[in-house]
Length: 20
Image (cartoon, rainbow, N blue to C red; front, side):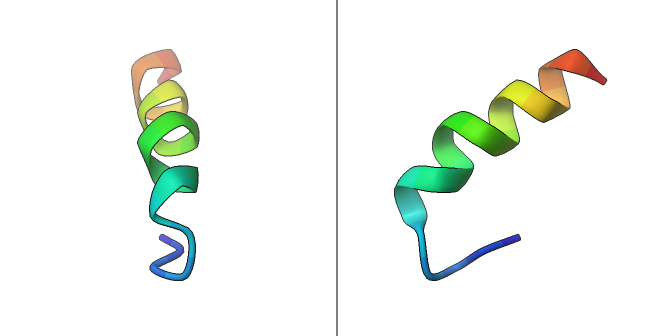
């Protein structure tokens, strides 16, 4: 996970986790 971009995980991580 990227701690540098809090706004990145919010959408990207959630989308990837939901897709998985």
